[in-house]
Length: 235
Image 1: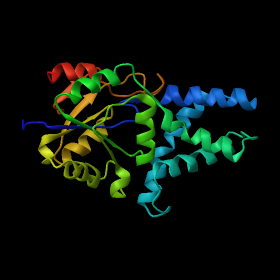
Image 2: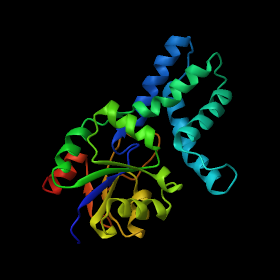
Image 3: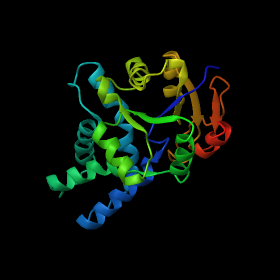
């Protein structure tokens, strides 16, 4: 294996716990506005709308949108679907920006700080630049660099995102490794010439959603946390 010099990280689900964070923000909103709803269900539905919305952009049904814009589109549709009324524009905007305030998994910050000593560490996320910057600020995420798919006007798993990230960092693709909790993301990165490290996140989705969390020999590393990955990489 070529010398790995940079680690680029998927963020939603891999580094931060979107489901608990959005559920918590929804409950706080419900308490403020006296709205009774299953906010864990809302969080799951919001996230479930993400890939279909990106596909609508790819098909040309929607113009290019960053993830904040897509999240707002999905939010507005869910408020109608679930018959949630009484929110002001300010309420909706604040709730939509909950994605800027997602909390890291307990191992993330410590693991990233260890990896940072030996590698360049960066995001490689569909989240837009402002979202990822605010998330890092709020969560204490110690990135060397923030790279967003927004920079390429593409979303993962389009190859332009992986190839563009390596080019921006100034490394050959085979000196860069994607770290992600999602196997489809990792396979797409490998097709673009990057290495791949799988981090299993069994709590990302509710137990009712069956996710393949088993180690895969096709990946360079399989880890149970970012700290475990740091251990394996000798950081």
